[in-house]
Amino acid sequence: VEKAGAATEGFLLFPNPAVSIVEIALAEAADRDLEVQVISTLGLVVNKTAISKGAQLANINVSRLARGFYFVKITGDGVMHVKKLLVK
Image 1 (cartoon, rainbow, N blue to C red):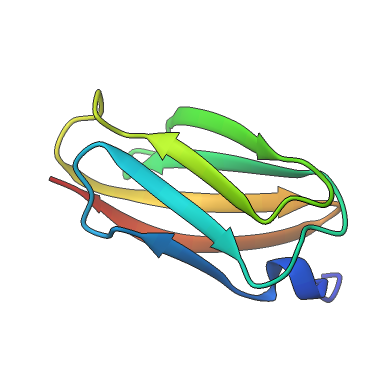
Image 2: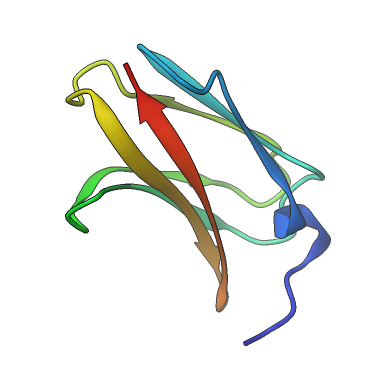
């Protein structure tokens, strides 16, 4: 597994729990294009977005998702980071 770049070593996911919009804030600007997926506990990708190289923020609309736990996965060039998200 490749060592993560500084841009994906840490990210904030807020608010968590969420009702409508979740913001993702990278620790630093992305050093490559990144894919963001919201994944249900059944393993289904229920939402996708991207963070472009040089960006540091992304928003995800979760208002249409059922209440419950999800995973937010950020990937790019073999690097992967996952955090839990609760949708109310």
